[in-house]
Image 1: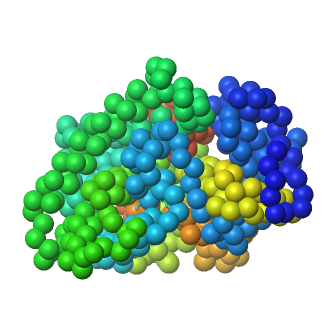
Image 2: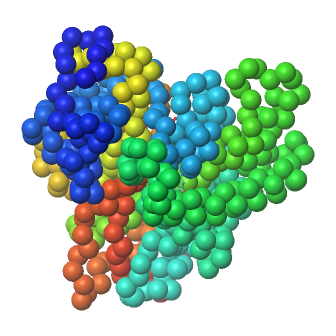
Image 3: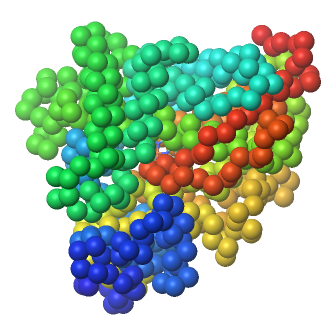
Length: 485
Ligand code: HEM
Ligand code: PLO
């Protein structure tokens, strides 16, 4: 067992040589639920062995905050796994990179670029609104049909990140977009899955279906990224910075002019490519997933949808489109978004952290190199912190007057916290607000008549996926015959 600096010794799942605790976890595809339920037997903080890796599972917000905030730096590492190494070319991105000066530098660059092109920029609101308008047009054309909204939601969100990263966008049916949909699904289905290859790297020599799929998908993604990169390099002159790709190229140009570059801060082509790949991938898959969950919950809770629409009718009316500046006017919509992020966290186990030194959690010693999994599902479904946690109730995020949103419990971390906190929180919230406001101002979303309500059960993976379902978008009464300009 592990030794460390703390006093107590953590309870661990029984482990066999070589396979570790795999047998207790095998056959449970919903890993977040399995780890949540194991609390009953082992307590909220316990250890287990994945092959030769010691893993600590955190299920309470107190310990989660200690790991992410109080001892953030001691737990700022990332594990290296076969699949994420393939995705990020050995951790040359941000999300799967180990803690170090280069990771810090990449984060700082992206943060600066996002605030320049994104957050708080009029241009971004315009881009999101343009995509929202196009989404509404498609919904209008498919009126009263049982529609799978997923491809259209994905295209809307993709075009926002595409504008940000590459200053480009996709039309409906664009073959490059179709290719992207396919490869991205393949990556989401396979990456970071604690498959046998990740536990025993030496098993790579054996054929593995998932690994082959991942490699095939990454080839397509890498070609696409490389093409954008080459186009940008050729067009880049250093004067105008059109997007994130240009911003990264400019930083490198400046660094080259001030040669020699600071040691440890050399941004290779791979670093630029993988960084954009992260933002593009995270930008698309997370926000789209939340929008799908939001639509699904609105089908299950029509009274919530009605309340959002009443609030909008009252505060905005029909004579104009919703704007970002309306956010304080629409607390119930904001509360609904918060509740979706609570009840179905996009990233139910965050991204695993790694301890960079011998340290402790609570009274327990944690050795250097331990993987720490924060189970956000447990944190968001803790009965001591949340009243009827499986109930979808946006009202819990509102004050008594229903005017302001606040979290009723500190047991809420949808974007993580601390030095590895999500880089896209502001952007994601802008998109979620505008897309939902535009759609619900105009349409009521319903379950097609002859069909049962689709399941609320998620599919565990690098993001908590929604099962495919169909929606009927009915133009609201007030909109029949009327149109705003
Ligand atoms: C990391 C949530 C959208 C970029 C994360 C983490 C979570 C998260 C839980 C892991 C934190 C940790 O490991 O401690 C979400 C949610 C989103 C969202 C719920 C949507 C509602 C986005 C968007 C972008 C983005 C739109 C891109 C602009 C990133 C990056 C990281 C990250 C780059 C890695 C940070 C690091 O390791 O240093 N996100 N995210 N995310 N997110 Fe997001
Ligand atoms: C999504 C599929 C893309 O093709 C590649 C990709 C890049 C970055 C990943 C993202 C995927 C999934 C969600 C991740 C994001 C980095 C941060 C984010 C893991 C795999 C979250 C929610 O933590």
